[in-house]
Structures are given as structure tokens and as C-alpha cells.
Length: 245
Length: 253
Picture 1 (cartoon, rainbow over the protein chains, first blue to last red):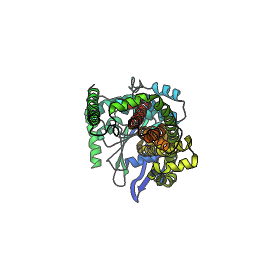
Picture 2: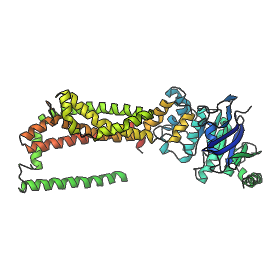
Picture 3: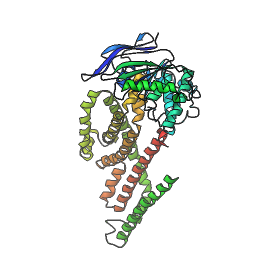
């Protein structure tokens, strides 16, 4: 059974249909990308899945439970790290636990126990402003993970990083994901990123946005370091580009 | 390091400006350009300040007590109002114009009324200070609450946070710097408000002292008390700055 399934979701704003009959399935431990151009309704879908907005039609299911329009079940991470400047890194990361009612001390300890695994050791007592962009996104991912160990939504999380940082973060990301097995729906407009990180890719095209193709990336994980330079990689890229244009 | 040395140079300029004014003032007075009875020289003012020091301190204590009590209550009122006005939009729309209206009434104009209603004791003075000090706090906090990042609020909502959790974790800490900006203004208003209300009647305080020395035409003592009031205001503002640094450690670097 899928951990997260989105069934026939449609949503309009001001009589303009943004997304039409979108269906997505995400299985345990999978990284699935939703690839599409900016303004194609990715963020609208994202808000529906997070429970922040109610779809006109369709439903969202988490572990067999209907969570349509109900926030508090799926956490997400954006391009903006959204770390609160007035909290130390460990307190930022512990925030979802505190919101759920865990005692501050306990939440802090639990959060701190993941710092090493996420490559964040030594940053506990720092403030976000003292961290580099890549480190901030690591902290944001850990916060997302602590919210829910089942499913996370990532909306273009790495698109604000420069190319070299991005490459390092991608390696780190695949490495961490291998360890924590977090099922992830990854929204992006970066084709290379989608192929590099995902097990499957949904292509979102047209107006209103519809899922018009699904591509399975057969390359096994953990992936080769030079996967993005291989012929297979290029083949996937050609296929996606041909479909998008 | 660079910043520090720049700070010192800035201070050199402002200090020299003050020094120039004092020297000119002393010259005008000593050379008899203005009658030294009308404009006592800075040296005379300092002498008066020293001679009157015990008296000034006695009155300061009263004024400061009023100022702190009024400021404390004003901050509390301002805070409560801001929180409720932020949480309940209808309350905001009903109260905001009223609050602005209270600020168009000149303090000096309502002070006599307050004296008539509440007598010569502390009450009318504290009320006047509350009226003048809550406003910067309320407005500062409201702006702070409204300027909160909606993406952060949405993230907390997605995590299942309720209205008050969002307030406590995002809105309140996010409004801190605006709160302190308001508090700086309120702190100086509190002292001025106390002095003004004492002018209109009372048994002690710097305002009462001022009316007394004015009636005796002791210009040197007048200047002494004026300087004392500005020093007190400056110290209070400095105190607010220190409190802000203490409460907002993340702003350091």
C-alpha cells in the first residue's frame, strides 16, 4: 500500500483551473519527483497535500487515512529554509516536537541526537544566521524529518544554492535518505536534479497542470558518483526534454 | 574591530559638537552678551546642580516611581491590546481608530482634568503616563505581528500548530525588535509625562520642583533640573537598549 496517495485532485483559483485530476502514489522509502515548469501548479498541489488548502475535487490519503484539508500530517521544506532567526539551530529543529506537545528538554535531546547523522554536528548552539546556505537546508530537512518520519514534501529545496554547493548537498541528501528511508515527494523544475535523486518522476505539464508521464529511474541506489555523466542519464534527460517541449 | 573604531570617531564628532555649544554658551554668558540672570552660564548650572543635589534626588525618586509604575502599566495594557487586536480582526477595526484618536489629544490638555477627577496624589499622574506610553507599544507590536513571514506561519500550520502556538513561536518573538523600538519611545514619554502632570499639582517630584524654582526665578536651578530630566531619559533609553541585547541574543552577530 502506498504511504501517500493523491487521488484525482483538481483545484481552481478565480475560475481558472490550476491543476486537473492529479493522482500520485508514493511508497515507503521512495523518492518521487514532480517535475514541471514554474507556475505549472506544483505549489498549488503542494498546499493541497500539506492540508493547507482544500481541493475542489479529489482526496489525499496518508497511510490509508483521509487527510484532505487537514494540516498537521505532512511536513514540508521550501527553497527558503524558514529557520527562525531567534532560535538556535537545535531549537529550530526541535520545533515540530514542541508543537506536538513534547517537553522542551526532551525535544531538544531528541533533535540533538540526529545532528551527527545529518552532518550538523557542532551547530546546535548556533543561530541560523551563522550557518551557510547548505547547512541551513540540512537543518531544515532534519526539522521536516522530525515532524514526520513517514512522508515529507520538498518544494524546490535546493534551487537557491549555487552549483557547487548544490552538488555537495545532493550527495549528502542521497546519503542521508539511504539511512533514514524517508518517503519523499520532491517538487522541482531542475531535470538533472530529478533524475539524480528520484526513483520515479512524474511530469506535470500543460494548463491546467496534468500529469502526463511517469518515468522510472532504474539506476540502483546508492547511485554511482558519476551517474549524471552516463549515457543512461542522458537518455532519461532526452526522454524528459522531448516530452516537455 | 573596524566597527568599533568607527563608533569612536562618530562619538568624537558628537562630543565635539556638544563641547562647542557649551563653550559658546559659557562665552555668551561670561561676556555679558545675555544677562547672566536670564541665561546662567553652564558653570553656574553645574554649581546649582551640586548645591541642590539632595533635593533633586528626593524629587527624582517620586518622579521615577510614577514613571516606572505608569510605564509598567502602559506596557502591560499596550501588550494586551496588541495581542487581542491581532487575534481578533473585528476588534482591530473597532479599536484602531480610537487608539489613534487618543493620541491626538495633547497631554497638557487632559492633565488638569485628571487632577480634578483623581486629586493631587499619584493616580492622575500614573493614568496620564499610561495613556501616553501604551500607544508606541501597541503600534510597535501590531506592526511586528503583521509583518510576520506568512511562509513560516504556513509551515507551523502544516505542522499542526494552533493559533496560540503560532503566536508564541513566531509572532511574539518576531515582533520583539519593534516592541523594543516602541519601549524606547515610551520610556522617554513616561518621564516627560510624569513631569508635566506634576506641574499641574502635586506634593513632590521634579515637576513640582520646577514650578517652585520658576516662581523664585532661579534660572540656574531650572536648567539644572532640565538637564537632570534629560539625563534620566537618556539613562532609561540606554536601559532599554541593554534589556533588548539581553532579550535578543541572536542579534549580536
